[in-house]
Image 1 (cartoon, helix red, strand yellow):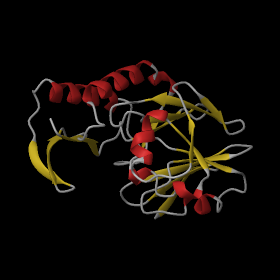
Image 2: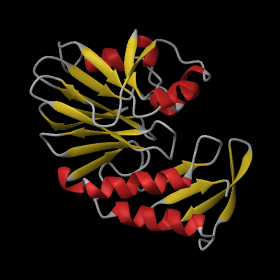
Image 3: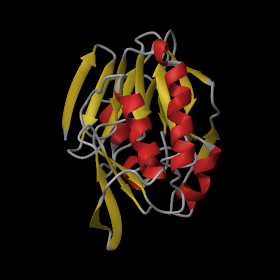
Image 4: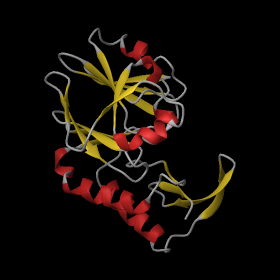
Length: 227
């Protein structure tokens, strides 16, 4: 685990394959996701703040919910409930919807719906700093798009809409891949996803979790897909 301080009130926890984030306001702090192998994210957060700590999940894949059991409740899209609870998740979810504002005290966070990677994936916009914490959909690593919950049409629609509000953020912080990615990756990801849908992209067979998927590597990012 490495910890990077972005500023006096923002920290990045990196397990080596996935990140989660701590954002501190004047009244409370928020963890964005809770790690994969990490089971004590709340305790880690308390090393940097004495304020109450809430949890916001970008989505419910297991590599983002490792410490969820430390919280009696957490913020998550209702569209993730099947993914979370059928996967053994515990606790009470507090529903978040597109456009919702969670104010940490002089630090408002805006929820941006980004379905596609999962039905309830969200990005979290730190309005004042103009940082977007994008979860998995916007990154330069390998984006998982296989299995019944992943859907390329929804993914393209989400990113096309994200482009329309891109003036609201200057930096993008994904959960995987590079710590930051530039905004111009968004249209590139849209184009790549459309090429996969249209059958124009060439892929190679890969084995992931014991099953066969297709890897589409575009250089700036890659998709693992079952189409």
